[in-house]
Structure formats: C-alpha cells, structure tokens
Image: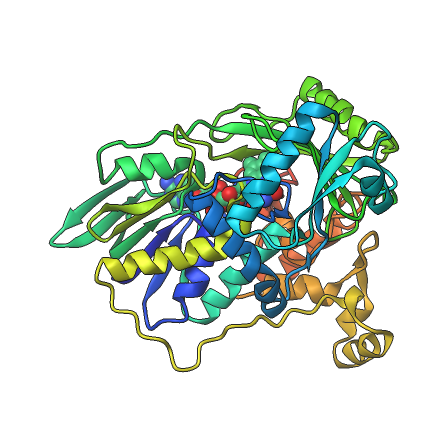
Length: 477
Ligand SMILES: Cc1cc2nc3c(=O)[nH]c(=O)nc-3n(C[C@H](O)[C@H](O)[C@H](O)COP(=O)(O)OP(=O)(O)OC[C@H]3O[C@@H](n4cnc5c(N)ncnc54)[C@H](O)[C@@H]3O)c2cc1C
C-alpha cells in the first residue's frame, strides 16, 4: 500500500512527486500514457509568466507569482533549460493601452516585481522587430521561458531516485474507499493508498466525480502553434504577448530555450484528447503574429502542434480537499506551468490538513545530474569523450546530440522507451529535420539498449508503431 497515490504524470503530478519525495513516504504516480509529460505539459507556450494576468486575490495570482519566483533556482538544481527573458504585452491603440494599464495595476496588486509601462518608441528600442503600429507595452522583467517536458521529467527522475514509483500505462477508471483506504481500479490492477492527489489535467473533473459530487466541469480548449527554425529565433529576445481577452492570453511570439521561435496559440473549443492542427486556425495564428512582428518568415516553420487547456466552468484553479484524504489539483490551465512548484507546496499543505504525517528524509536527492554535451566547454567535451567514447558519436546532427546522451535517456530513473521519449529527454529529433535523419538510429539504439524488437518500438503514444513487417516468429508459423 502507498501512503500517497498521485493520479497524473504531468508537470503538476511530477512537481508534487518531487516535493513529496523529500519526505519519508511511499509514493506512486499513476499515469495512463506510456511516459510522463504527455498531456498539456508537452504542448504549451513554455512561458514562466510574471503574474500580472490573473485576477488579484485568486489562487492563480498567488501561486503564479510564487511559482515564478521558485522556478529559476529549481531549474538550476534540476539541470533544466530556463531563461529569464522578460516579456512585453503589446498595445495597438487606445483600448489596448487601457488593458496594459489595468494589467500594470494587477501586477502591483499581485506583487509582480519590476513591471513598467512603455510607450511605442521605448518598446521598439527594446525589441526592434515589433511592428511600427505598436503604441505601447507592459514590460515585465521577471517572466521567463523553460523546456516544460524536460522540467517535468527532471522532477520525475529525482522523485524516482528518492523511491517514488511511476506506474505508466495505468489508467484510473474507478475509485472506492475501503476501511479508510482508497482503492484505485486501473484495468485489472488495483492500487491502494492512504491519500490521493488528483492531478489528472483535463480529466481532473472525471477523477473528482469518482469520489465526490460533481462540482466543476472541464471545458477543453485547444491552442495551436507554429514552431520555427532557429533562423527565426533571434527576431525577438523577449516573449511578446498581445493584450489578453476572455478567450486567453492571445497569440504570442517568443524565443524558446533551444533558440527557436514559437508562435501561437489560438483558442477554440476542443475535446479532451484530440491534438490535431487545422489550417484555418494556423492561418489565423500566423496573421495575428505578423501584426506583432511583421518580419517572421513562415517558410521557416519546422512543425505545427496543438495542446489542450484544462479550462473549466470556474475561473480559478480548483485546489482543495474533495473527500477525506483526497486532494484535487484540478482545472490547472495557464499559468499552471509557472505555478507548478507553488501548487505542489499547496498540495503538501492540504495533505497536512488531512492529517498526513510528513517527516523529512535524512538525505533525499534534491538535484539532478544531467549532461548536455553541446552546452559544455571544449575542455569538458574532450574529458567526456575520453571517459566515454559514445560522447564522440553525434547521432542528432541538427541538435548535436551524442549517443551517450541517448543512452543516458534510456537509462534514466524514468527511462525513455519510445523515439519521442528519447527526444524529450535528450533533444534528439528536435531540430530542423525533426528526426528525419536521427530517428532510425535512435530506434536502433533503443533496441540495442533495451532488447526490444524493432517492430515493437513506438514513436510516441500507444499504437504509434514505426516499422511494419513480419517477425521471424510469424515467418515460422
Ligand atoms: C495551449 C496551451 C498553452 C499554455 N501555455 C502556458 C504557458 O505559457 N505558461 C504556463 O504557465 N502555463 C501554460 N499552459 C498551462 C500548462 O500547460 C498547464 O497548466 C500544465 O501543463 C498542466 O499540467 P497538469 O499536470 O495539470 O496536466 P497534464 O500535463 O495534462 O497532465 C495530466 C496527466 O494526467 C494523466 N491522466 C488523465 N487521466 C488519467 C487517468 N484516468 N488515469 C491516469 N492518468 C490520467 C494524463 O495522461 C496526463 O499525463 C498552457 C496550456 C496550453 C494547453
């Protein structure tokens, strides 16, 4: 039996697992997919928001600002790519100027450090790529950018080193309570736990309804993006927002931690699972982004993708005790990525309220050791190759990812088992060719390291087979 079962291995479940793993507890993360960070956590804008957007006094406002404060140090400890870039909310005319002023006031109330209102000229001095039609901007220096799935995986890896169990491909389908213990039914498996944390993203309402009366409903909202080649990555050094509307924060243009440019998202009603892109929505995103930054060359797009927001019929995050010893971390829409470490603290506080006894471990692992070859100095690179010649074999030429880093991904405490799992841990396939060259070599290394049959290797989620053909066994039949 576990002390705490966390349902959902997105950034929220992984942050809770990371922070709880510092205590003497038996913890498991139950995730329905074949890897962590496969929900909203892998398809978002990757911005660590300053915190001027949420309504003052809400959980969202408080946890956003606190999460953003914690993120840089946490990323440093975990070896996660993070950059403090700052951001501008662009105004195009009088109505937007009023919004910018309102956001400034909210920033004051929410405790956002260093924010400033700029006129159009000052904004263009900071970011020469923005349109001549920009009349002003709200500048927020504390905002940043991060690699969201790397962040979640890093926290999962440290939690696993501290003994947290990751039960992947395990979908919670019903929950009951037996003598004060929660019984989670996952297909033909049953998992028992004293406390449960519901971090199931868009499905957090469904999980809540398994133990309590319905009190909120997910209204999934799809956001679609363009990802541009590094040739476009320097067109802005800060995140450029439009003024937010009821539908969301609008189409942004931002550098990524890997030096690419991300453009999006729009907002349209979606389903819980479907992440297809649509050409008319992408055209809308493109046209809106070009109003902000006219020089973006969309011929340099390398990928389009979509993510699903866990919007609900409530405006705030839904964080609370749903039933005895059962905690909801529901409706974690944007700025959930920014707020993640603070939401995890909130979960721990609620567990204490439920009566959980939390004793600190004596020497828990808190930091992650993770080598990114191309980030090293020449001297360090030579040393790495001397110690392990696999660092001398570049597998992904676009991103300069070595064989040693791919092996590291496959031997991680939460190991990659798919080609995209390797991509999320080692960055192989993230470049201009999007895995066209390195994909087959990654597949070979997966088979060599794990003993898997090549026909069984997946690109991504369940069913995404890469190779088709007859196996030897089938030939013998
Ligand atoms: C388009 C878009 C843009 C965004 N931009 C930003 C941004 O720039 N900055 C920011 O701070 N936030 C942003 N967000 C919000 C942020 O991405 C989310 O708040 C965050 O990723 C939520 O994490 P999560 O762990 O709650 O959800 P998820 O990452 O979706 O994780 C939930 C997990 O639960 C699993 N699960 C579901 N049901 C079950 C079940 N029955 N059994 C087992 N497992 C289950 C899922 O498979 C999934 O892995 C954005 C979101 C979107 C969609």
